[in-house]
Length: 343
Length: 152
Image (cartoon, rainbow over all chains, first blue to last red; front, side, top):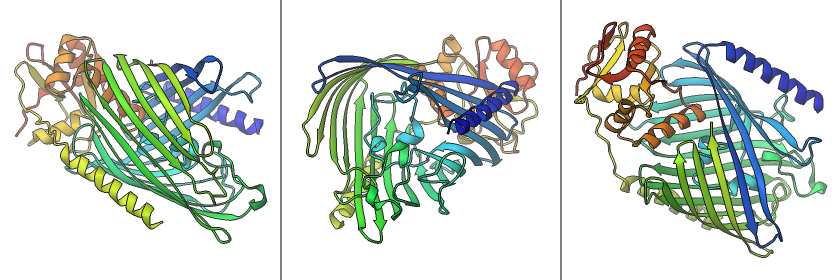
């Protein structure tokens, strides 16, 4: 495993050196520091968030590179910090607004995953939706992506991806099946985007799930699971109004257990009261079927009321009250703060 | 299962209704009082419409009608002209404008413009870079570049 990690790091370093010598290379980054006061903990905690570096390089008129690496706290690491390659994409723009992209991507499923992912200064709220921690969402995919953006009057777009899928790593697939992701969207007005999205994969129970989530029942390892996830999203961000919402249905099918249905949805609304102040509300819910074998069963709702102060487009401060209700558990209340910057 | 499908249908319907209700529609202007749109002398501009140009300057089109790659040059919003361009051409506040380009690059949707603090440097960039386009004030020396006259 260490050898694989070293190899990834070497390849990434090589790509970095290659990019830096190319024309028009830019290095940007994001970082955040958070604080949390919660009624399930006796302590108030200040915590380091992520330090995200992303590099873009226009290598030729048609070929470009995007690399993103994240440094974050990890108690499993001997140094307490881990470096991970979040994206490594080589893009070939073969005609007009149509491109083919190869490498490791934020799976073009879910608007939040496509738009924000690690860019905390771009996040409208402090945390990602529960969709990310539920295991429903395929956060990253290594594979080939066909992309068309801003097509026609209504700025239609498509993204179709074939990737290694669940249980695979960035070097090999652990089974013969590939994952398929489709995103169709439109942006008829500046600041608006809506669309539908789908993800399909087959894998064995016991495979490492999305974003490190694990299977639930060891006794059911190697049970073949067919996964189909579909969803819709809408976002509108203009000078005063901010609206963002997604809904997703996830269906896992096995021969012996049958079909389980899981849902995830969230809605965010913000209103700019002054040039730099944006109060906002967010409701976020995940429901995992009680017969589910691949994901942990739970029903989790989060209610958020928050305030964002924007020093500039590269620095903001967020203050939030969160209430989280979990099935078969007690509710927790917390006050969260975040200082996020871009550089 | 039926109930969930029904819920999903209602949600999608809600999303589509919301998108229909929000009817903000910017009108891209083809002429500006103090500003002039310039391009590299090699760019074929015959019959370029204002709608087409809007897509180009917003980096929604990656190439000119003749297939050449678009390279955008703009003034920084810390400069008076930069904030004027953000306001008059893009109809955005300077914060929205800067965030627009940061998000575009981070999402991997396109290439950010080259930003300048001097108009002379911007004109020089447009004159040298094939496929380049920029916006400057009418008072600046425009030698070596062509001026874009848009058709409505």
